[in-house]
Amino acid sequence: MVKQLLQSLSLTPTTTQWLISSASRRLQSISTTRHIEVQVVKTQMSLNNHYMFGPYKIDSKEVFYSTPLSYAMVNLRPLLPGHILFSLKIRLREVKRFFDLTADETSDLWLSAQKVGKQLECYHKASSLTFSIQDGPQAGQTVPHVHIHIVPRKGGDFENNDEIYEAMDVKEKELKQKLDLDKERTDRSLEEMAQEADAYRQLFL
Image 1 (cartoon, rainbow, N blue to C red):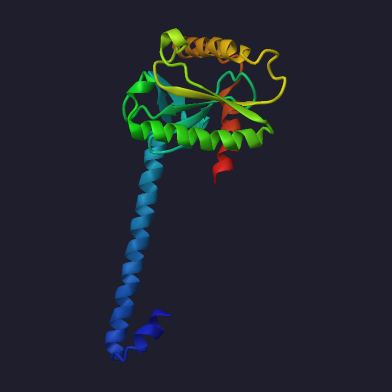
Image 2: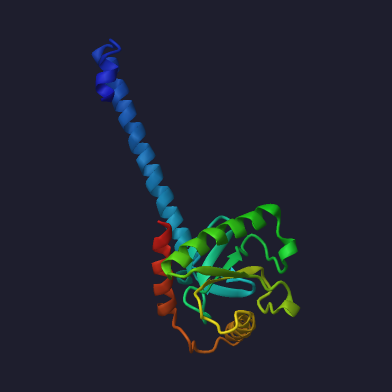
């Protein structure tokens, strides 16, 4: 197609051939550059195989969705199927309280939580969602970094609907104990969590 276009310009055969060769070399250069960029990204991913959740490391296999500012991960001890955590990326900065978020961080965190929540509700055939932030230690926050609990809900999953908040406090404390002591996982293995994250990852392709 390029050759036909050049020929239509009434250029000399020599000039036409030179332009074709030049274009070919340029395309090869672009292809090589792109290949290098892809390899660099893969190398960075292999080197940075974890996320930070407050002072704790989270294996990247547990993360199924991310933006430049935030990420979603499966839960070590979920209250209900689909109970996940959404957090700000700490490599940018550590943020303990909700009011410390910038406007961009707040927008990204909640718009992403909205997007993820919608997909999880559909995936688990739920009918509602609980979004919860424990903002500060007296509110039940045990990991000192802003994060949102997202829980798909169905009728009858808790006899008294408000019991979910008490249960969430218990699970938050259990998570901190696990992260602090690094005890053997009793609820779910990394393989189980990675499998769940893989399934959720397919929802955003």
